[in-house]
Every structure is written in C-alpha cells, then in structure tokens.
Amino acid sequence: MKAGLLRLADYLGSSYWFVPTIMAIGAVLLAIGMVTLDAALGSSWMGGYAWIYASHPDGARQVLSSVGGSMITVAGTVFSVTIAAVVYASGQYGPRLLTNFMRDRGNQVTLGTFIATFLYCLLVLRTIRSAEESGGYGFVPNLALLVGVLLALCSIAVLIYFIHHVPSKIHINSVIEDVGDRLLRGIDDRFPHFIGEAPDDHTATADSLPATFRDHASPAVGAERFVVKAKDTGYIQFLDDETVMRVARENDLVLRLQYQPGDFVHVGRALVEAWPQNRCDDKCADALRDAVAIGSRRSALQDLRFLVDELVEIAARALSPGVNDPFTAVTCLDWLSAALSDLAGRSLPSHLRVDDDGALRVIAHPVTFASLMDRSFGALAQYCAPDMVAALRYLNALGEVSLDCDEPDRLATIRSYADKLEELANEGLKGFNLRRVRDRADELRAALAEPDYKRRLRDGTAWLAGTA
Image (tube, rainbow, N blue to C red):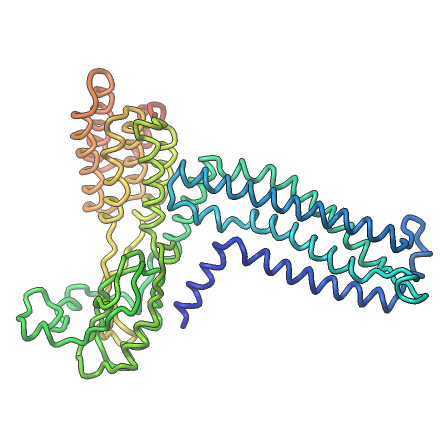
C-alpha cells in the first residue's frame, strides 16, 4: 500500500495537470464563496472608501470579460512555451531529463494561475444581473469583482516570473545543479540506511545463510524456496523496506530480493525468494508484491543510479563529436565528484539485514563504493579520455573524491580509474595534450601513494591552479 501511494505521489508531482487542477478547484470554491459573501453584505460598505466604488452591471461584465479572455489566451501561450522548452531540453540534454522539467513547480503554478483566474472570472461573470434582466432587481458582486482584479494583477506578476524562469531553468548549469542536488540529498537520506539493523559481524551472518541461498547449493537444496513472481512488467520504482522486514519477521522467513529499485522486471519473473517455502503462503506473497511499486520509467525515489546516469548522459552528450562541449562535461564531473566525495566518507550498509533480535531476515543487493564509482567515473572514462580539458578535470575530480576517503580499498579503486583514463588517453590523445594528462595522472598517483596524501593534494599548486 505504501509503495503504491508513494509511486502515485511521485507521478502526480511530475504531471502538468495535478497542480493546475487543484488551483482550478480552488478558484471555483473562491468564486462561490465570494459571490455568497457579496449577496450577504451588498455593496453599501463601499461608501466608506473613497478609492473604490460600486460597479454597474455593464462595467462589471466588461472587466471580467477582459480579464477572463486575456487569461485563457495567455494560458495557451504559456503552455506552448513550456512544451517548446521541454522538447528543446529533451533533445539537447537527454529524454531521461524530461521528468525533471515536468515536475518543475514554477511551470505548474504558472499554468494553474492563469486557468484559475479564467475560471474565477467566468463563474463570477454569470452571476451579474441587471435590473431589466431580473425583473427590477440587479446584482453586481462588487467584492468578487475586486478579487478578480487582484487575481489579474497576480497573474501579471506570475507572467513576469515565468518569462525569467523558463530560460533560467533550461540553462545547462541549472539542469545539472538540479540533478546534482537531488543526488546529494539522496546519498544523505540513504546512507547509512538499512532494512532492519546492520549486523556487526558480517562474516558470522554470512555463515548463517540458509543452505538454499548459498552459491554452491545442490539442485535439490537450491529448490527449497518459495518464489514470489512479479505481476507487472516495468521498472521497480520503490521498495517498501519496512513492509518487507515486517512480513519476514511475522512469518519467520529469510527473504532474498532479486531486484533493486531501478531494475527492469517483467511479469512472471522471480521478484522475491523466501525460505522456508512452507511458511510463505499466497497472502504473504501478495504482501511482498504490494511492497514493490513497478512503473513504466525509472524514478529517483530510491534509485541513486538513475541520478548518476542522468549526469553521465549529459556529460556523454556534451563530449560527442556533434556537440563538442567539454565544459558542460566538466560541470557534470564536478557534481559527480561532490557526490562520490560525500559517499566516500560514509559507511555503506551490508546486503545482509537482520531484525531487532539479530536474526537474518533479508538478503538485499550489495551497495558498494566501487560499484557507484564504476557507474559514474567508469562510464565517463571513454568519453573524457580523448578530450584534454575533460580528462584533466576527470583526474582532478578523482583527487577531490580521495580527500574524503580513508579506506585503503576505496583509495585503490580511485587510483585504478586514473590508470584506466591514462590507458584510454594513450589511444585518443597525442603530443602536448597526452603529456599533460600523463603528468596529471602521475601527480595523482604519487600523492595517493603517500601516507599524508590529503595534505599533499591540498597543498599541491598543480592541483589548485592547474585544473581544467
């Protein structure tokens, strides 16, 4: 249930219709309320204010007709401009970034403001009656008319904001910043983040794995598990870890997750495997299926790899021969280095999760520093190597990540990507460009080989002033 609700919330947040619909409903309620208030108060109260006066039916109709007609015209123009900006951004930066523009709250509120103002004016307009039309009793909702004029002024302010917002939002630095900020927030929220409690002794917990889940299990032993099959085809958008742990604990099960958020699964594939199989009935299987939300596209709800892939895609497009924009790739590398630097100083959860009593309950997919380095710097090495500017910033980014890294195996991973970049640069660069990349790689490796590598990187003039 929770997984479905979160998936729905994510869908509504990235739709153009939800916020304008809510604002339109609010405009209808406001129109009804203001007309009702006008009917109760009348217009005699206006005599005490010199700067306002009661309008006649013809004048009120003219004002509301002008405001309402202009608002629906501007709303159509705003919608056209928004779609044009979305099409441009999708083609320029990648189709995966389309959702980022659709979930932009500024565009949604702008469209909703004009539609709400139009509906408000339309509903108030139909309540205006002249004395001839109503048999001697006219009605002009003067208070509602004033609110309509105020809404028109607010719409003008929103239009000015929109004119500034659209070009600033599709600026490449703003696009990258939006993705990078979400990636940093996701790392902060998820690490350390466990399904249950992380075991203190990983080796002991590994030894307690059921025989059916071990690598060298016999065919007969390997079949001693209940397979929960997927009921939909698509990408896993959200996994309700609390529900998974609760179901495992209530039924005294050990569950192995076959997929993680961001993976593609099709109907009938094993979604979760449970042991012992006799303790997992259809009700338990349905609860586990409901804990997984599957949709038509990847989502950043729990999938950090998706945000990393977006930055990699922007950088790869920028370094393609048809675009040849290394400084956009440099910006992506800066944000990736910030994210991996943040991750380098964190303890990542074990893939073996236990409950409050220390019993193994869930076998998840391991999340390692090396895997995320490969997803980011590993994927970009082939694109950065043939370009001197991007290659130098690539090595600088590795140095930035190492400043927050204390574990030897993670430092070895960072060093390995400096070697891989240099190996690729030997094929794509030559002459002066190749020498600069080799020198920078040698400087990085020499600094990382020393015990005080952090000080050496911070103090090195080449590191501070020789960046791309």
